Length: 397
Image 1: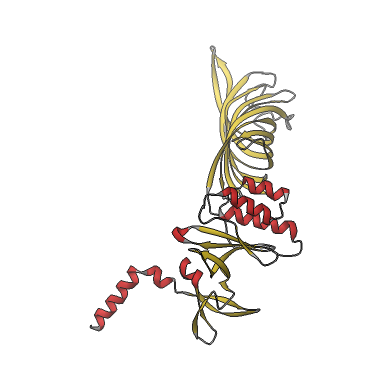
Image 2: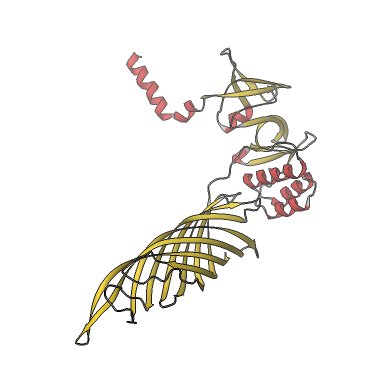
């Protein structure tokens, strides 16, 4: 075979089997040999091969394959395997199982036939117990019973285990919770992160809003600063998307809020019917993820603005009293905190408080003078600021 043909075949094989070639990439890692940790380079191969062998390159460049009978484990900065006994086809042998949680108790994963995920717990006495049934993989009741027994039948964990769906992410969290309960001075490491998964929620809102209105100083119109604060009821709806399987840590939320505010000064009345459309980034805190902080932007549409007693100093005498009306569309920023309570499995009560502020510009049409029963009007742009403090109750699903 010519050199050109050989080169072409090599390139063709690389294009056809890229994952096979890439799977042999050497990573900085270690092997466990008794009480010794030996550093070097290891190959993160396929799941099947990782469970059977470790391809290890020492610092002097020599490479050797180790089986689970020869070493106690191996790993890199991101993946860790330990040698444990696993029964396969009625025969118990040693395999490498991947560590998902390392702490007061370890959670390990072994992938069996038909990609069946089998989970093992190493207890505080260094004994391994399989908590799943390879013959009946959907027997969640048996798995939950084993977990409750191994985790010392703690009432708090027992309740959480009963409510869990028992995938690897939930199992990792339950194992970490067990560590937090019984190990006060040790560090628990979780080597598996939940997948990014979205869940959608909605809510009906009701609340109270306190608004404050102010105008900049201007010689063009009377400004009754500051206006007394306006307290009004509000209603609305909420849509929310939450990301994360075991930890609901982040979400995006939008709302549509309706309210009517009335601001009365000594000589001037402003009435505003408005809709607000906020969009927040929400971060969920606490062990139960029932605390939240959020912030974002909102658009507001004052679709009906009515005033009485306002005037243009340079155009009308001070004693003229009349009504003007207008509309405005503006943007603002908002931030707040909240807390959620589960009323039932599918119904949630959410209490939140937030502060919002917007700088606005409205176009008002003033009647200047009347000529033969016909008013001549003057359009004027007026800047104003509205701040909101809201307390909202949401019934969500």
